[in-house]
Length: 71
Image (cartoon, rainbow, N blue to C red; front, side, top):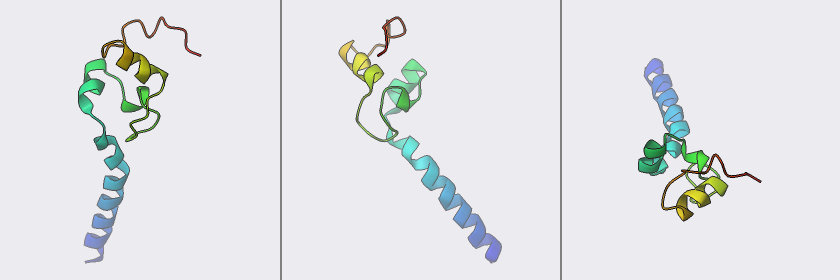
C-alpha cells in the first residue's frame, strides 16, 4: 500500500511540474519550432518579450527576427 501512495505522490509531483507547459497555445510553437518562452516572458504568462512583440507585429511571422538587432 505504501508503494502505491509513493507512486501516486511522484506522479502528482511530475504532473504539477509539467502542467504549466500545457497552458500555452501550441499552434504557434509548432509552426515556428520554438518553445513558448521564446516569445513569452514566462511559461503560462500572456506577456510578450521582444521576439513575441515582433512576431505579433509582423503578421505572426519571425521572418527577419534573426537579422534584427536585439537590444
